[in-house]
Amino acid sequence: MKTLLTSLLLFLTILSTSCSRANVGGKWSGQFKPADSTRSEPAVMVLTQTGNVVTGTAGPDATHQWAIKNGKVDGDSINFDVTSNNEITIHFALKLVDKHLKGEAKDQAGTAGHTAAVDLTRAD
Image 1 (spheres, rainbow, N blue to C red):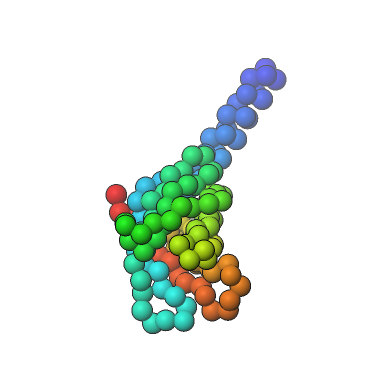
Image 2: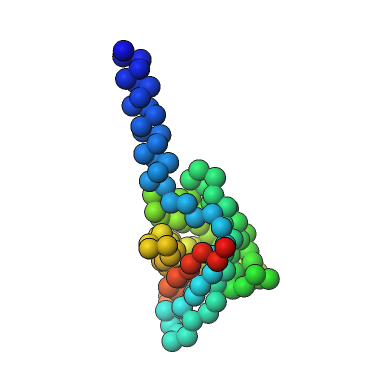
């Protein structure tokens, strides 16, 4: 009986953990709005999720994409880094909210004012 109860608790823990994790795999497109600008720029991400690890690419369009590094999903939060061609690393801190990936992208070079609001929806 004790073994059955332990197995049931383990199963419920695994089930609740997998159900509470956001599913972000797929193609996403939307807007990237720099904090120091009044205009928006396009953004495209192609994400692959395995458990709580996110890989894939991100960039301004389908032809200009950079590899995602250090991608993690924690509940409905998604965090990863992208290093552009000019060797600037941008950290993305996003949340899955009402079928949108929303959040902030921040230049990791340490320069003030290099942040942007991100709002993406599934494109596939």
